[in-house]
Length: 85
Image 1 (cartoon, rainbow, N blue to C red):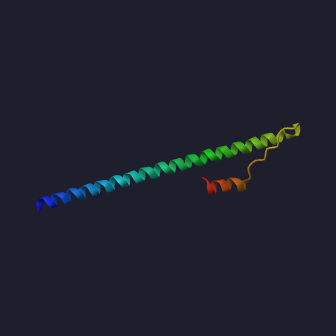
Image 2: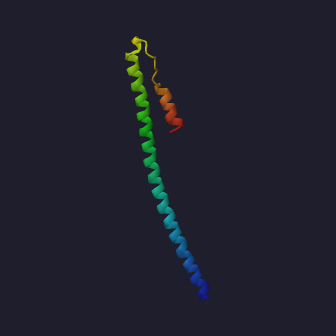
Image 3: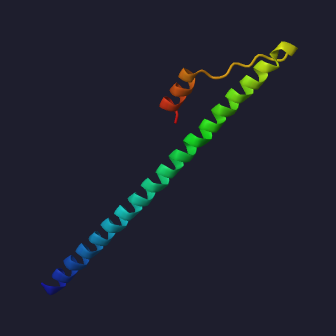
């Protein structure tokens, strides 16, 4: 019987260790995911602000016959962030 008790005790220890490792890994993944989401939002924000800046710059030069560039509307950007980001 003592061999069975040793096996069950060892199993309980391994299960507890595995649960602790799983919990630690989940916390690390959650932190990494949060950092990546913030970085993604900043990258898209700079992308849209660059497009808006280009459109405003092109609007000042449109009287010279340059191309007319329309900046993305607020609704388009909000929809993008709601669906994609």
